[in-house]
Image 1: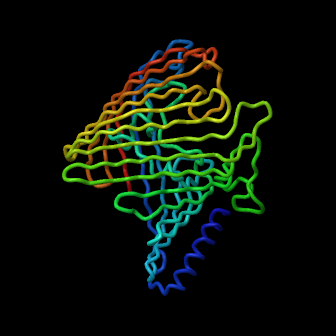
Image 2 (image 1 turned 45 degrees about the vertical axis):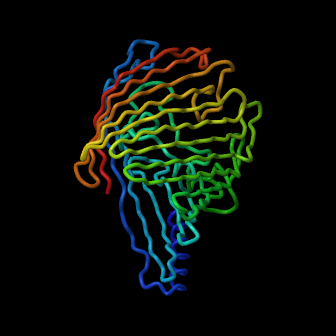
Image 3 (image 1 turned 90 degrees about the vertical axis):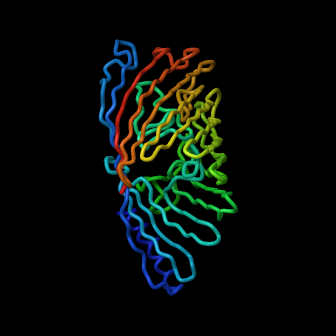
Length: 375
């Protein structure tokens, strides 16, 4: 109900602006979203003391959202709108994102719960499908303790914030974002849609910034896409006796296309708060398009001094590595309907007893099929 009131207030402001500009049409509501479904088998060591122990061989996974979007362009050329994303399979915090935006010759301003500068614009290599990737996919074919090599994230998450994007200047565009509090995403938290301001308990960052630049060039039968940026937590409430602190992250990616062939690489470095917690992810991929099919390969390597890229827990002198290679096939049946498949291999190693009493070496082979519906 509180979220509905916020959106109602935002839309009321949009309506006022529309009246002042003498727009002939109001905001029109569109409904969209996606449904991703996979069936996969993971073949690993199921014996006692291994990560595959008491884990099933096969699984059905899905991820779905419904999107509501209202937008109109005023007589003065200003475009205004609101966007709400509803999780289709989640019982708590069911609203994924909710924001309003203004777009014109000055660029685009977005305010609300949303992806920020890096997460919404960063580049990943070709070779992935709607369901499968060597980085952070809808379906990860392994029972390793890390769970993916994410390389397209920032330190702000979906907390309430402000994003600004410049106009596109000859292929170049810059995005910047600001999050007042990293404890202000959903409407159950203090200060999000009620009295006062968000709370900042121990272990919480606030006053967080991100920036990301992109450049695209289309030549004759070839093209280039580049992106790079960083994310910085400028304030942090330290925990008594805890190994935590301000976190910074840096990401860049470069993709090249030559006719039907594409190749690229990515890197993200996680400068985690506290001592001996840093991490990095590197990888690459390639694809070949032969309409309606796309054939792809991808690989990723993650190195973690902490338990993963987002944890402040570490054992000094230890580290964990996670590697994954995949081959993919994507088939476009019709607009908005895709079938995809994957064969993958994952191997993991815990060095220096980074996490005591866990399996030091792990590997898994997987095979999977899936579908992606966009509407």
